[in-house]
Amino acid sequence: LLSAFNITNGEVLWRRPQAMGTNNAPSVGKLSSDGPLSVVIALGHHVSLPLPDTVADIMGVLAPSSALIAVDAATGEPTGWGWAPPPYRHALMEGDTFPLH
Image (cartoon, rainbow, N blue to C red; front, side):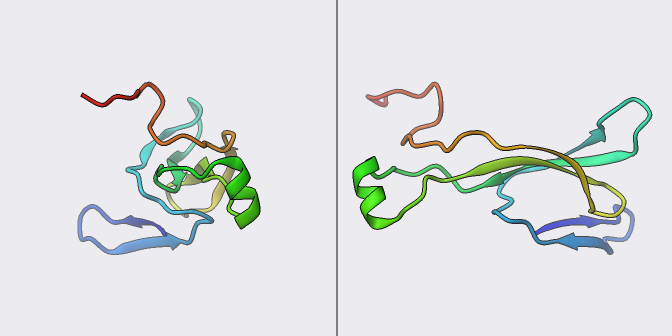
């Protein structure tokens, strides 16, 4: 659920359900120099230990998915901009390696 609040009185301006979890802080700004304010947020699930492909295929488990989306800051309506990276099948974030120190 992505929500916007009035900074002065805390009133809810809008709430929009999303296809995936919103476990990140959004960014607010203009997507173009003359455009309206937009909210950009990464959607998705936390990285966890993945199952080997063969086990995942047998169990019907999908790799965690994620996406970046942008919505109009005033209304919460989608701007039409978004990006979805390929599924991530690793236990650690990019750049982290074993063994952990």
